[in-house]
Amino acid sequence: MGPQGPGIDPDVSRTTCMKRFTGFRRVVPWALIGLLAAGTAAGFALGLAETPNAGGSAPRAPSRDPGATSTTSSSTVSTVPPQPPVVSVAYLRPHLGVVGIANAPSSAGARLELTTDFVHWRDITPPIPGPDKYGDTYRFTDVSFLNPRLGWVVAYSEPVSSLRLYRTTDGGRNWRYEGQAPGCGSVCAENVDFVDPLHGWREVIEAMAGQVSLASTADGGRTWSPVHNPARWPAAGLLSFSDTDHGFIADTLPPNDDFPTTGNSLGHFSELWSTSDGGTTWQQDSTELPGGYPTAQTYVDLPTSFENSNVVLPVALFEANTTAVAFYTSRDGGASWSLASVEPTSSLLHQGQAQWPSISSVVGGLEGVFPSVSVAAPGTWWVVSGAWPGHPMVQVTSDSGGSWTNLNSTGLPPLISSLQAVNATTAWATVDGSGCGLVGTANGGATWYPICPGI
Image: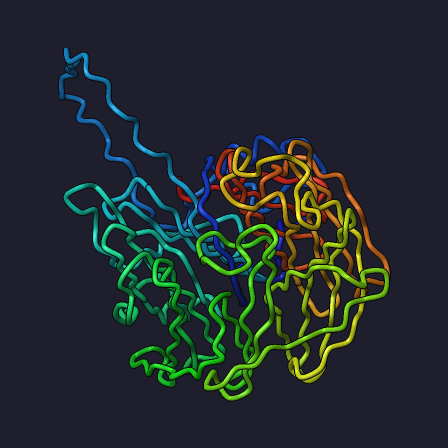
């Protein structure tokens, strides 16, 4: 049997799933990916398909009437070309991929696509409002799926500061509108996280007001109750719960520009917050700095939780001209942490400065400056670091840091905004300034290919 596509079980064509990612990027047809891989040993690299919409119902561009006549405008007024489709959210887990597409060629102006075999995609777009009179549309900004049938998605419209949450129980064939996020009075972002079919949380961040609000549900999102937080409530970070009681708030690596946080500027580093009572009270967690980094500044990533209370916490370290990512593990849901591994990186951010005078003149955010990290399994971790103007370094371990594979990647653009891996060979990355804005690898990060479903 030839090599399989990423996340594809040879005996199962469409099965189960898991969780998360965000980014706002561009797209290229799936047929192109097939051409890129033709003749290589990797036959299918992250769904290299020649039938991008087989089995799906993605809307097509209207066909031209054979009897219609073509007219040419005599106007000399130049027009601004429409923005190309962009990937606004990408979500990867074993046997499940969900991608939100903004500026999509559809009546709603955005589209949500789902795959369970990483070859065939289908349109699962919820009934979001179409473009307003100015042509502004909603885009999908966060996704939480428990399996290929049960999931939630957030749609956001910046001009009207509207956040809408939708829920499906049949794989996107039907959706229930679960209302707008409470307390969103300015430019907002929303993070939604479910741990089972009934229990979930909605975190709303108001950028202009500098406020964070939290609501919880115990009935699958049909009703929501505000969580009245005490004074010691984190003013920044993304949300992730491991069960109905235990959860964390932290930034991402690299910092996510769509969720304004205290760590979103150079020289301001982040902290980890945790709760053990469903979000009612929060406290700061601390970890001891590893040897060799006695005065390092730290940037805490969002922990990843697994069964049996196993949690993995990546922490970026910035010590003078040395950078690294430390991995801490917990067997009690995050109540205590043990240092498992420290991996030196080639991050472009040094303590107090970067290697170029003005980062804003190179990138719009901090991608390519901070390392990108993804925890695929309790002992399988990815780190991507170093960027502009060269190719990033990809580092992967599958034995909890006992040994690392270091690769100079090809096809991976330097400006990475998010990384999402499912095992030691398969990962997605959202990127800026390159093609689709979404790329994937099926050979441990050595080679990356563009992914553009449904366009």
